[in-house]
Image (tube, rainbow, N blue to C red; front, side):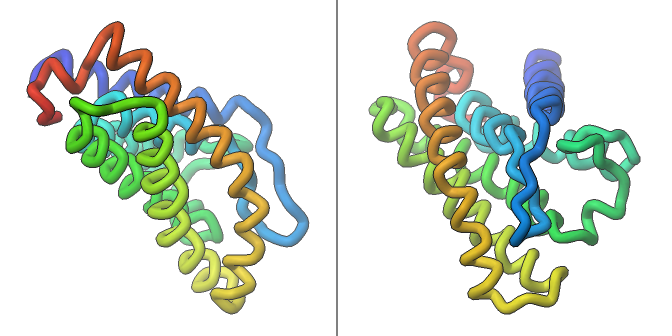
Length: 185
């Protein structure tokens, strides 16, 4: 791992943390807020690749666990890993890695459409597949109720996927971070 890799990892951890500045929107049916931070997760994987993107989110989560208030609403500390958002926090890590892996795999043919599909698959499908069971387990609600409560988040996440895809394609054309490592991040 080079100094450049470490710098990029720290940069995207910071970028994802900064997205907590946007005020969270809490829905009355579900104790998980809508935040901009999942956009940072999509960007980390899509721009840095699997290894560096995953490490960026891991760094963020370690800092949160240490007590830094880097999550939306100024939350931080170990308690967030035992609350209703715990599954989504773990989902961030897996999603960043998955998005990065798919981006690396399809790098040569990466277009806005393929980048959008990658972000939707990793940033919505993978994240929800981990986050929804987490809500069900921690909140003690049936999986179907946790799923139905999460449906309200999908339109916003689709917008984040579209933004991420546009940024990914632009970065690929202007400053291809993944391409500089021959597809391996």
